Amino acid sequence: MESYENLALDLADGILTITINRESKMNALNRATMLELKEAFQYVQDNPKDIRGVVLTGAGEKAFVAGADITEFTGLSEMHARKFAEEGQEIFQSIENCHTPVIAVVNGFALGGGCELAMSAHMRIAVSTAKFGQPEVNLGLIPGYGGTQRLTQLIGKGRAFEFLMSADMISAERAEQLGLANYVEADKASALAKATELLQKIASKAPVAIGLVIDSVNAHFEDGANGYQTEANAFAGCFGTEDFKEGVAAFLEKRKANFKGE
Image 1 (spheres, rainbow, N blue to C red):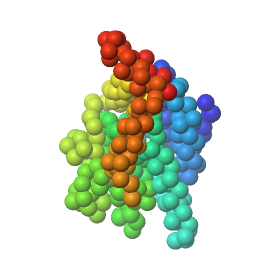
Image 2 (image 1 turned 120 degrees about the vertical axis):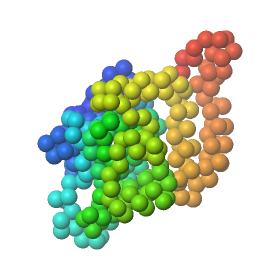
Image 3 (image 1 turned 135 degrees about the vertical axis):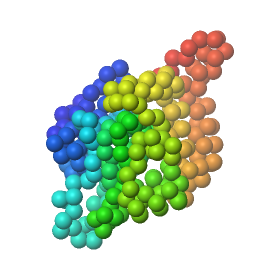
Image 4 (image 1 turned 90 degrees about the vertical axis):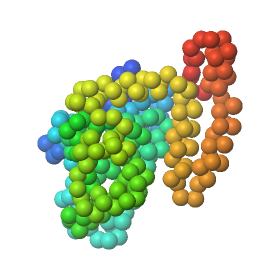
């Protein structure tokens, strides 16, 4: 693995933990950190047999990611601002579409770009002190990294309007009630343990099928995509995999399957 200035990576038992490592800056997302996230998730995509799950979290206890680095916004023209947003959306889409399951462990504040980053993961486990929010309207802005779209997908149109326009923060408990968080855990250690437990369970399943589940679920929200057809194509594609043959054989032989991701 490469070393990064703004990220810390740790691979153990097939689970890669990616930590946004700018604690003194509340783990704010500057451009350099965004580019490192792009590289890190490309590394994940390139090593599917070594990496079976990803935990994404922030250094320390105060913040997952407290937002984007606002100092980089000053002086942007409309043209450059559009490119800035599109590049961020592309990076977060690479996380959302990653065939390796990604769980965000949200510790402390997940605001603005931090909330958008958490929502790009496939699942979210919140520490009880976590706070989610999209406060961009306080700055005369709106989310630019997909926040208006993913928040609506996760909690519904009416609630998304409320939180996007009021800039109110959402507690961990409320996030779980709304479907923004899958689980709430008492502290960061227990949240990380829960994420690892869940990823290890998923890692025991057929990797190709897991990737196709991600494709099929995401197709529901993809503009112009037919989710049902995506599912049918993916279902059919499973029949040509070694994992399918192994899964059926293991079922008939009443043994645990040994999937190889082929």
